[in-house]
Image (tube, rainbow, N blue to C red; front, top):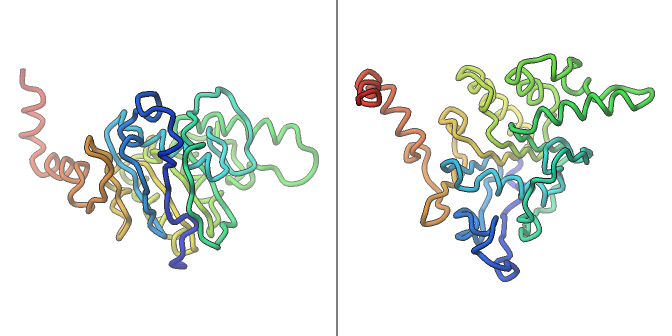
Length: 249
């Protein structure tokens, strides 16, 4: 892909924060955040549940012009105003390149996106339906995993900025491998990804930047140094022993 990313860095305007004792600024990912450098192709943000990675990703998406509930840039619906004000305190360091495509996928609210697509298609007059960009089959008539794959294989067209929050949520291991392959196709088509994930399969993308959230802050780590990789490798290599230990009283 072109070596120039759409977004170079995520910068927290720390001098504007009213208090680091209040949510969302009290989250560990925010308290220690200064500048987060993004890879031109794929950047992963990883951490335990509650570390704030989804809140940060949502804020990045909102600062980039996406609907906090997900969708493309033209989606403006809101079913519940639950997103934080963090995006107002982020500055995105952009390059001169501008994406031709873009999408924010939130696994937890993708149902709402599918409902909005059906509503818009009912209300519009002539012309192609929005659902045609997703393969022509209602996302509600597909399994959660199938709808995720339809999004990535049909809707994502390349030269895009794609922000994905836990895309593995409804995917089997083999489907996660399919997503990994699709990410590579889109990177070769000059796309940039920012992904929050728990999946050691998806985060195996070669040469990606992996930012891990820990108590001491955010650090860039190698794939084989992530807890996700180490824990999964240990479990698979010694699964019988691990199961016995986990089930022991």
